[in-house]
Image 1 (cartoon, rainbow, N blue to C red):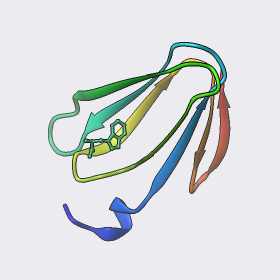
Image 2 (cartoon, rainbow, N blue to C red):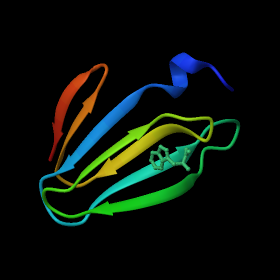
Image 3 (cartoon, rainbow, N blue to C red):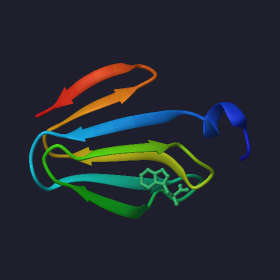
Image 4 (spheres, rainbow, N blue to C red):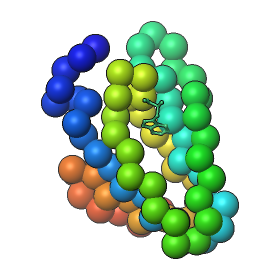
Length: 74
Ligand code: TRP
């Protein structure tokens, strides 16, 4: 898929504790983990949904901002 409205969508994850995991899940028929990024407290990850990534799983306490709003994970 090369839809620019999909591929320009950013999200932000700010870790509120050590060891928060941001896990990228593959786009397409198979939904698999393809990348896991570990954030320590105060670290921020800014990323996009891409041709390879259609879903993201966040484990741990974090603030998550997307175009749909902001939420805090506990
Ligand atoms: N190589 C991955 C990609 O282009 C990098 C990536 C983008 C990623 N967004 C992500 C990894 C979200 C984990 C979570 O899709």
